Picture 1 (tube, helix red, strand yellow):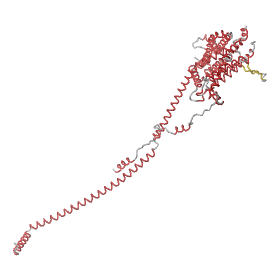
Picture 2 (tube, one colour; picture 1 turned 90 degrees about the vertical axis):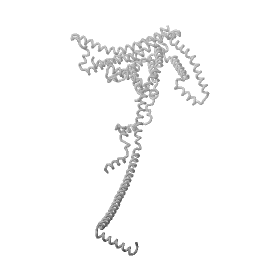
Picture 3 (cartoon, rainbow over the protein chains, first blue to last red; picture 1 turned 60 degrees about the vertical axis):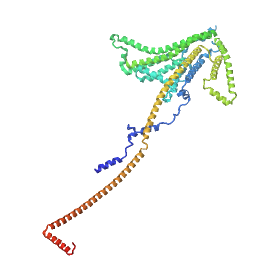
Length: 97
Length: 257
Length: 238
């Protein structure tokens, strides 16, 4: 009689459990440490622009334009004309044979 | 009188397809070997540079977000990839087909710029390319199927008596592929460039005939513009056809009907 | 000879248009700037250059181009021949195609890029939200230690109080029990005394009654009474 009485009274003494391990792992049993490790290794802030020059100026991101295409066409045209001129056009110029 | 003068000025419309030596010297080695840079060599180097430059500049630095250049390259890659997957079914041949596509396309497009030399109008390039590919395809078929590769030349269900004849016919048609593949490309491009050259010669004569004729000539010039556009389209179409046929030949070799 | 004619006509057609425009443009620039310091003027020109939408730079480019071409032709550095027609045709066609393709391509590419951007951005936002939720759920556990400690302290105190109360209760119980025992003792003694007295009275009455019943005693009592009466009479009391 006395023992059960004491037990009943002790049951009232122990406070309710308000924290469980499942709260920390969101119930799936996953540990937080991999997540934290992953994020601690990520670089912070905006990415540094590594490549400069023509590529950054005309090709990348918002700078992409058709200008290089036009310049390439004009350049090849100029090259072709120069070759043609040196090969035979200059022999025709003042008096065409 | 004037026109006669100008006529002397004009060379054959086929002159543009000649391989000429731009720079040359005889090196005093191996019995005075002659080293020359021909226009064929120059433009091959140029095509190589343009293709490499395009892929270096357009590669977008491994960023996730595509740029307007890389998106075009990605689209081309996707369409070539779909050709390879539909035709062959094995993507291991994709790098070869992709490089082939870009080589022929850029060669044709550079040829469309005035004053330039089109290397695919050189028969040694076109036929050489197609022959090399066909030899490679034959080696591929032999290495996969060993001796069974020759069953390719005998259609199933032939009477024994007809076998020698049919083998001969099939062999000829197989070899004809090598020629037809190269000549198709070569002939189309040469025909287009020759047509443009002839038409431009006429137009030049008409343009230099005086102010009124100059204005009148603007009408045929519009037609000429359309033909130029057609040439541009032919550059793409011939590249596509060439690549498609190479794909189907590879498929024939690895699957033997 | 024919090329001469063309050159002459080109020259004739180019010059009257080109020269006034140049002078006009120069004048306009000189008037508009109204003599600011040279460095400012230079920066203004530099600002004007990259944006080719500007009318002045556009006409400038056109004038420069035609001028250069005219010079090249007149010096016979550029030889006019049938390839020139091809060049003109090709460039006109390319310009036309560029104009035709530019906007649709831009739209298509922008749409595509925007779509990929949207996917990446939304997944990033989603992930950030997940991590934030997780942090919040963990944050709720932030003061769980102190809270539990407080709860334990409280329950300790409760236990102590309860034990004290129990002790007091026991004391009260003992005292009341003692009182009850004592009371019963008192009651018992009282009853014993009462019964003793009753006993005593009864025995006395019984003795008296039995002695009354005895003849000797009756006689004695009678004798006593007679004696008393005699006494009284003697004394003359009655």
